[in-house]
Length: 257
Image 1 (cartoon, rainbow, N blue to C red):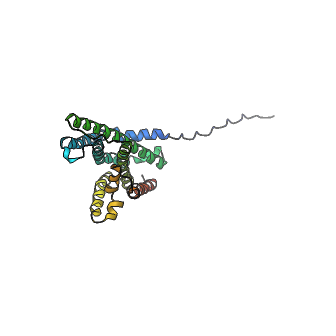
Image 2 (cartoon, rainbow, N blue to C red; image 1 turned 135 degrees about the vertical axis):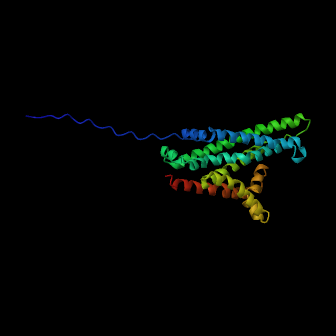
Image 3 (tube, one colour; image 1 turned 180 degrees about the horizontal axis):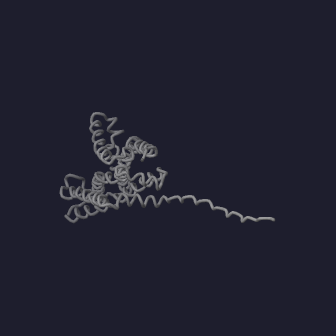
């Protein structure tokens, strides 16, 4: 007698986990950076402090050149005070709160997470530059309404240099946040290190013109690129490229357990 056995039903292979789209990572990181009470207060303070600084050339016209470009530069200086703190928290907050293990479990490829955080920081610098430009326009309107005559000297180069200056300050904060991975240490360093190098720069032209960010990046803000591009590049490499590369390397190898 012949006995027949039913054929075994083939087992379908388990579906491979879908790749999280990079746009979703950016949206998640944007939410982390902005959708908390502390973040909203800090972003509000960025706008308020910039607006407060812009009142200085309005009420004390002798303190600044009365030109449109000068008002825009004042806005850039205002943004450079607290906006870097916001992006530092984007890179350090999860390490301090121990939530980074959840993030890297959902997306084990840490470089993609860091790239999303970097994209969010650049978006913040762009949004901050737009807010600063609007506040500068309001200050110019207030000065004009008072009967003052301001020189309308804003060109594409001046606006681009303003945006570049804001971005450089944000990226320097990003680099320190990625490298130190501690909120208090990174925030302290973003204020203390430029001050220390500025002090050293008073005794060394090599430091002041090539390493200290204040002089080379002030050339950027002033739209004075001619003859200063090598110094600007060296300073950017020192404050942005090297610490950011070291921070990314450290992030990919740090134990999150």
